[in-house]
Image (tube, rainbow, N blue to C red):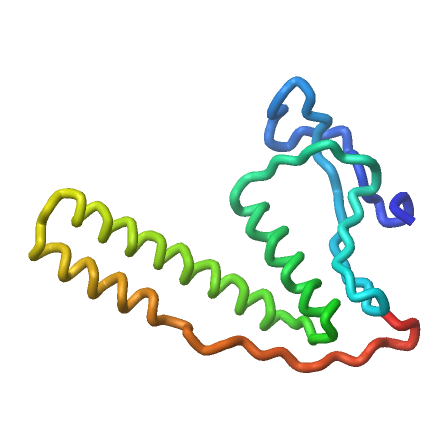
Length: 143
């Protein structure tokens, strides 16, 4: 099955060789087994480790989360990926706001700390509504 979908090693190093043990780029697939309610990651061949840049890590984690929604019976649409990207963006903004607050507090500037605290509070208050997903029916083949 992996060979039919062109998964596994490509023999290329599009971002250079990370270490002497780096075997190069790998194509993988992430899907959901609806009947077994599992997220399945197919590497196409045995993999000891993998490395990726932060954008690739974000994309892989979004895909895994989306397939987790599918495995639970939820619908995955473009909106799912948009929502995941927004959550990640809010988390990064919140992390930045908290870092700013910590920096201000560590320098002992109470006047600046109040402004930083209000900014962090405002950032953390964004997007507090829980996400909802529609139930998805299985296709004719159960997937």
